Image (cartoon, rainbow, N blue to C red; front, side, top):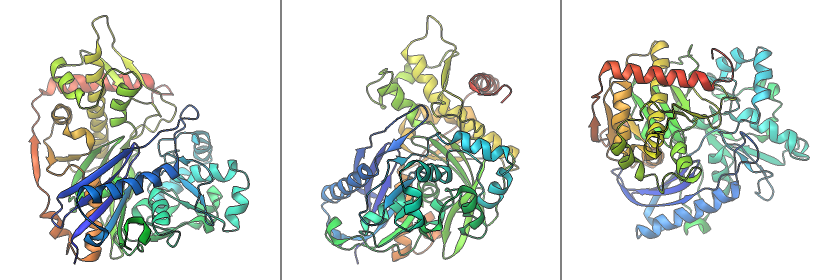
Length: 497
């Protein structure tokens, strides 16, 4: 039996494919950056066909780099940027509009209207989510209302909706499979996390035809087989999870109370709550962590919209750096941001503020401020936002975090990892395999085909590369964080927000 797993990791800024072996070690990988489209202020779009073509490219390149063939791959796992909304033609498999990305804020006014009408408690109770443009429901409604003939065609069953996982499953199987998993469904604002079904009342509220929706499966399940022309053989697709849930699995956070934080384009902290649905009183999200063998595990999540994207902006927007890897040396040489704070609210603020109209700013500039202070402030903003999430979780009654497991592209930066430990005041563990999002998808696929026998089996494969202990004094930690909170208040769209 082949024992390699191909993991497709379709993210916000790039598409990757990683081949893992049966012990969770990376064998080969390939990556292609994804073009971002910004058609208006606060609008973010992707070309879904670009995503598909990149997926084909990276999968073939990863196998070639590993000296492997389709017959060597036991299963395919998929993990994806969540909430990003694709609407396509069932007949020809072509999108009818660019995908609306999770960061997009165009439906802010619609969300505000629904909130004023008193619908948020209902939505939070059914879905665990807050009324925000972040989620898929209002994005899909916008497409139906603004793409010519889309609503009529949707009602006739001619169109299909999906998050990126569903889109890739459709393309991989040549339209034979229109499905998603429970983690991705739980981010649409249309899925009842208590009944584990699409919610008819919410479909009516958002005016979404049920004919558009994919079948919802477990995270580890039979999602069909890719078409033979994709890689040369019909490989089974056996694992699907949204990127942050996949990272939770890749970090082996299977016991209630375990916490991970992922630092990619955004930053996402998730606490496993087991079989208990915990409804946050501090504007965090309740979500499906994973669903296996029909049993649902839940989580509480804090979502920050901009983390690694801050560094991308420093590189591509301000051109202060040539590449992201330069930031560690710059921050080490600078040592301190010297009172400079960057609030990267480029597309609004996520948890725990949920302020779609906030915009980014840099405070504390003086004649002595240089590139070093601005870069350092950008890195520190990620740490401060993580502290925001931890504070909110504590107010919700969560047990104090004793260790934070971190992953994602930013955490290879030792300065960031150490600063994170200093700002939150608890040890930070970085695993040997930091591509935990892709690894989680591989674990799910491997569970389905028997490469891994259980979650306990997977837990034994997790190992720590380095622990970062906090070294900052309590007084300095408190002073820095107070300055951050003041900076956030100054970008809020409403007074006293």
